[in-house]
Amino acid sequence: MLETRVGERIAATDSLFVDPSLHPLHWTAILGQARLAAVARAQVEALQARIRPHFLFNSMNTVAALIRVDPAAAERTVEDLSELFRAALGSPDRGDGTLGEELALIERYLAIEQLRLGPRLRIRRELHELPADFPLPRLLLQPLVENAVRHGIQPLREGGEVVLRGARDGEGIRIEISNPLPPQPGAAGNGHGLRSVRQRVAFRYGPRAVVEAAPQGDHYVVMLRLPRASP
Amino acid sequence: MRVLIVDDEPLARARMTALLGECGDTQLVGTVADGEAALAALDELQPDVLLLDINMPGIDGVSVAQRLAGRARPQVIFCTAYEAHALQAFELGAADYLLKPVRLERLRDALQRARRRLDDSPRESTAFLHGRLRGEEVRIALHDVLCLLAEEKYVVVQHAGGELLIEESLRQLEEAWPDQLIRLHRNCLVPRARLVGLRSLADGRVLARLDGSEHSPEISRRNLAAVRRWLRLG
Image (cartoon, each protein chain N blue to C red):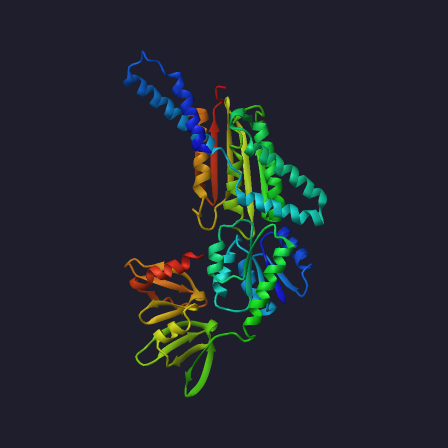
């Protein structure tokens, strides 16, 4: 699928440069750049957050359980899941979403996990006067919250607290997601989600953006500082 | 059949409880939220079957099954949201492997498989080692054994209640119980289910950590790869 898309892009780009007046070497160099750009673009698309299958099937199990005991909650959960999947499966060409939309999606996600994990999952929100219209790639922050739940809360029998912090930072924003340090740091899969976020941030906001992730005391904190990007 | 449900999610436990209510000839003896609680409840609840989630905090489902490997009772039926561990599950001798959300028919099939396996093994299916203790002939259940050490003429069986001498050689024991015992060293066998981890020393030696024992026997270089392979199942 991805291969095909790259192939199509390159073919389309090729046709722009079929100009016999160009020296063959020059032509090759330009084509090389175009191909690089196409590959980079395809990689970023591939990196676009995917909802983990585990999450889907666990959520389906939650719905199946709720239908018997709390049909209204089952209905809400189906609606929440649909919104998450609409965001995850949408076309990559529709451009940025907004911070407001992303925070709403995060609430959908957390509502589902809250049902699944019960009192083990506690959430504190310290979100102050964030610009809801701030442009943001879709599903940029949700995977970080998912990581916090998966690596910080799920391994703990007693559960723990995920803290979401956010504030304006000049023209931009500053977001922090914190979770208790897991008992065995570096459990499988810890790094991939973060790497993907780093790459997407770099691609969208350039070198002025900051993504930091490190233990702080007995918590693991991911911090993003995003400048307002040019549209 | 006595069934114990092991799952860290309250709603998942509730659903499994409801489904089980629609399966005939089963009795729910308890629900617990993690592997430690499951292992702790075995003696008291005496389940015939565990409906065992895999991803759980602390001791996960695979580790629980590892500790039960080689026992005929309880039978393990894994229930998981995502098929990442199916191969391991079967290597561990699970009766079945169900994907959540579990279908009622699949659960019935799985329970039937577990029942057949239980029927095939006599109620007292435990393997015993026979030996001598101060002139008396005694026997010890294999799953109570901590470690088997070769001494000059005998093999010393270390178990929770003390020690016992037996006449079979380590090689004979290893051949008699290949699924239950694993070789750590020329002079040492341990029950596979006891093996919970490795500890590497600064001088390059590697010691085995055994469940229920302070004793950490050394693993020879020659056996290390096989031991690691076994542990990687978890």
